[in-house]
Image (spheres, rainbow, N blue to C red):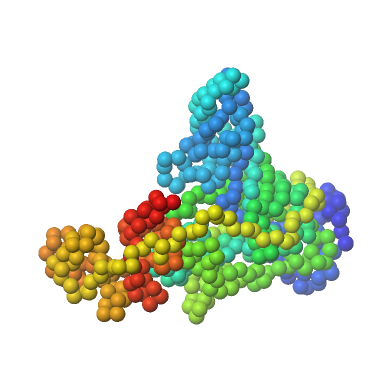
Length: 495
């Protein structure tokens, strides 16, 4: 048995034995008792996208004073409903009126890099705060306080993601190719702090950590902390002014938005043999589920289980098929971070702290409570669908479009299975190019919808593929209806 006080005494004398998480398994397997007695600290950490991150900033009072009600930093809106000149900038907040290549995460990175940030503030004016507008620039040094406070970091388990649909998907888990052609995954396996302390034996409120290249602390459980399902996480804080740009990086995830790549190191004190055993975890022991993101609902189907040794290999076997894997976290930068943390401890610049309160070991995150039920396709679609066969002529299709006041017609076979779709635009193209056969101009890869899909999902699909209607098909690909953007808007307008 050891105590944190005793380990700190060893640090002070330069006698502490520090090893990385990936080195501990071999040490422990050789001699468990010796590993527990001789190893003092196991360094763990991660470097990856942590969307639930941000910073509290204090700008100091203007002369005359202003009570900021609206605030933009490099055109990224920050929340200012805290006090007169305090604000919180979130990593995923996007630049106003611009595309999604720059957001709050980039503002935070720019501050850490020492760059000037444009500040634009508005207020309504009061007797004690008469100023109504401010336009200026600030650097990190100009701020009184810049405290990184992250509601949700260091997930105990990250799901791997694939996509069974026929179309490419851009998600917070990266770009997912259609028909399960790739798997994207996050996390660093055996290096993950919560893989090394899954029961929160030593990690807790008050634990000193290496956050963004600075000393920080764990301040509690993270939001959506869900230990019952192996999805625990932590809330962290640290001083932005002490952070290192190489561990604080804004990023743009195509089709999703911005996030903050953040480096976090957590030293695990080896107080007894049980803690030593837990820190001997290997990549093959750290398992996760492969989730099908092609199904857009809260609880997506699990199509397999995999461990990090398999994920890091570059390909995994799923349903008899080898699928390429793509990591979203960086092992290289994580190793660099752990090296720097070890050096700080050896140089007596970083001491350990014991937890002052435990992180909850039980609990399950709840889903959002909705007062109105989610509307589905079968509640708004037209069931009487005008269809045609592939051997119809352009003239026949034109007549159907005009006589029925519609813009598209699904093309089906003898048993009503979907073959394609033709639109008014296709007809115009056919006439311009002197095409007489409908089969030569119709679209064969049709964007379809399912009877029980939520309208929000269908509306997003229409917007993504620039269509204003989709045939509704059953599990046998037979046409059972059609839903248009007008159907969706009428339903929304009636509520």
